[in-house]
Length: 330
Length: 236
Ligand SMILES: Nc1ncnc2c1ncn2[C@@H]1O[C@H](COP(=O)(O)OP(=O)(O)OP(=O)(O)O)[C@@H](O)[C@H]1O
Ligand SMILES: [Mg+2]
Image (cartoon, rainbow over all chains, first blue to last red; front, side, top):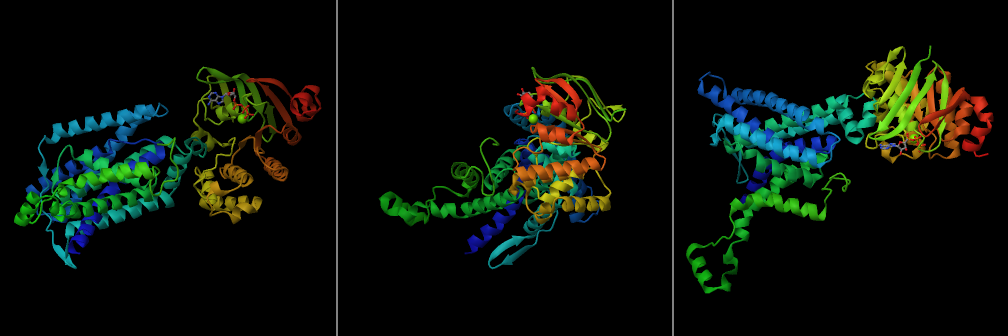
């Protein structure tokens, strides 16, 4: 039971991060039907920039309180990522609007490679460690541990999801975004400058990605120029799970994926413990008697779950949990 | 001087020329009909006038200025509104959000609110369905949304592309009554219609378009009486 509760908490934390990254994929897809494979790299750049800022402020003995230092890291990462998001739309995707689907898709992969290598040139090949400057108190709830960082990640993510929902459903820009996503030509006839609305979508998605990057960096205490690839792929899976193009779907998909992954990691060892079936061979029975466990797959198989989920969704419900239609849009 | 002056307008889709150099004028306050068979180029003409398509040749002057190459989002600000063929309502937005999109360029909130009430008075059905997504409306109701939405921008020039398409006779009558009342309020209208008789009865002048060219233009009553029009477009 403790394991279960603990993995739920870990899963919610991870899931919140996936959800925020997934929103970046789904917003862009919703408005231009493009899978921006470079979004994971934007998240990575967010983590790297924040790390650089936090590291130098923490090292400079400024006497700033740690929370202020982390906020300063976020405050630098967000505009940098927004600029990256804007530039990528303006330079790479806008000229390809109206081109066959494959062209922007390949471009996205190209941008992601370029961004990774730029990051490698700037921040080196080595993993950089996030300075653990924030005191991270651990609370105990019913036998499970919740850390201050986990609480911060979950609540900040919830705030961002609420904020984004309000933006999309309550503001003029949000209505224009929804109108453009349905029919850009008619949105133009209403006076919407669709280029500006599309650029705003990229910028907002990148801003969310930047915060996600800081959150992952702080959670794992590490950042690396390749970290965006796997994270991006998982968040993309989460967006597909929820129904790509659908905001609520990305949030739901992210959280579910985090939970599946954490529970999977928590129980896979036990589930694949060959000692449950020790009768199949005497050799095995002997080893079980000695070690207690012969585990086939450990929690390092955690990453597999995201893709099992992705495959299952694509097979059984290609439009995702909350998606409406499939087919020509994908 | 005319509000809208089109000279030698040419529009092409890649290599396919759909409009081959037409001249067309609409004076302020006028209601002009543009009729023609399927594929004649009527929709293409309206889209070019609204800035959705870029002309490949010729010029468009509106209110004394050249708007030949202006994009649609600028033209709305100048007072040109297009009700597109097939209505083009935003299916996943509510009726009220759709109407709100029509007023996207305006920031006089109180006036917008008053205009919204006017649209609801014109189409009480829309008021009942204001919180419903537009995709769930019937075709006729969607046409009301499309027309109401265009009016919300307070256009000087209203371009209507087949507003009666696919509607039951009673609804067609209602839509034409609305068009007449909009026109009576001084809005200049260019009306494209398959229903040539109704269009020419509502309009003061008309143009007949065939394979991308204007083949005939005259007072609407003259066109209604002309042998050529009667045979080709009125089914007589
Ligand atoms: N997107 C497009 N690409 C290529 N050709 C097109 C395109 N849209 C229209 N056309 C062609 O341009 C010509 C004029 O089409 P248009 O839609 O303007 O006709 P229309 O007069 O509005 O007809 P209808 O009464 O059927 O609506 C047609 O031959 C049509 O096939
Ligand atoms: Mg047409």
